[in-house]
Amino acid sequence: MTVLLAMLVAVAALTGHTWLNATRWLRRPTDRPDDLDEPVAVLLPLRDEATRVTPCLRALLAQRGVPGLRVVVLDDGSTDGTADVVRAVVGDDPRVTVLTGVAPPPGWLGKPHACWQLATRADPEATALVFVDADVVLAPRAVAAAVTELRAARATLLSPYPRIVVATAADRLVQPLLQWLWLTFLPLRAMERSPRPSLAAAGGQFLVVDRAGYTAAGGHAAVADKILEDVELARAVKRAGGRIALADGSRLATCRMYDDWPQLRDGYSKSLWASFGHPGAAAAVVAALLLLYTAPPLVALAVASTAPRMSMVALIAYLLGVAGRVLTARATGGRWWPDALAHPVSVVVLGWLTVRSYHLRKRRRLTWRGRPVS
Image 1 (cartoon, rainbow, N blue to C red):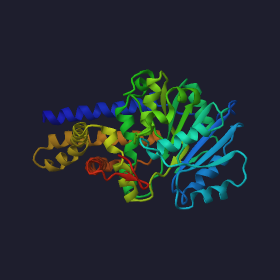
Image 2 (cartoon, rainbow, N blue to C red; image 1 turned 120 degrees about the horizontal axis):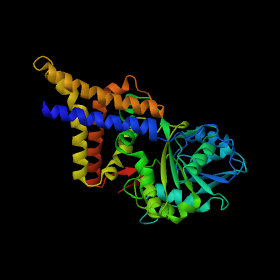
Image 3 (cartoon, rainbow, N blue to C red; image 1 turned 90 degrees about the horizontal axis):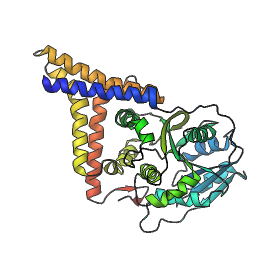
């Protein structure tokens, strides 16, 4: 009973922290900003995105409030006709430049190298760079809103996290954990104020940087071999003396990261090992998550008839964990009913994906888009 009470207190504290982050500390950019008075370059790296890049491109061409907008697209060795799709959509729009990428040299991973090529080829007059992935669809004034928030926060790097679109059962189990993890475990106010590189987070789907600060941090060249290049770029910015900020971008952008379960499984497997670092740390974190969020409903069911008080404590712990998911969904434009009730199952799936990630990395079998990632 004592252990169970301790678990309940821990879950309550974590859910309380989620509430603080979601209601007090999470930045919420306006979706109706004034027009920008600075030139901006939007940078779009593409590799085999022919089937889903069109909505992204159309949204970029429809941006408002950015008089100096320039869009640079890089075809990173696609074999599915991505470049042809891009040219068909953008036509002869003078705001758009389409580049053909070169293969990453030794020591570089594909995504950082593509982003670095884009950054070095962007309009030299652009004072802000906006990195966007092909699976992101921006609202009409999203770029203006994001750059406005970057300046308001006096930050070098701003990560406005898009609303993650879920369509399948696997999506609903796994994808909401992205926002839940950083809202529950990351102290947002301290992250913004602290110069410690270890206290950093960012999402590469939609990333806004001050160009001078990006250059001072070494840009993507400083994270050439990092699978989590977005988080590592945020750390590089801090090491260079810059500031970072995280924001709710659910009103500015949507993102459907993976089309099916194999893509989702492989997408998480390629990077979870880098999120945790040492396997011992990963084991400790996964064990703690299972203990706090998966064990309580099992205990509640197991002792319901023999120890009703213990069962009630376990049930309250479970419901507090569900409340954390509900808070996260409401704060980031996500779906909570009935998905939050399956939170214990979500944690189990996350644990399995973590084990799979380390297993494949140990055997040097991690790849993404046809390229090795470790």
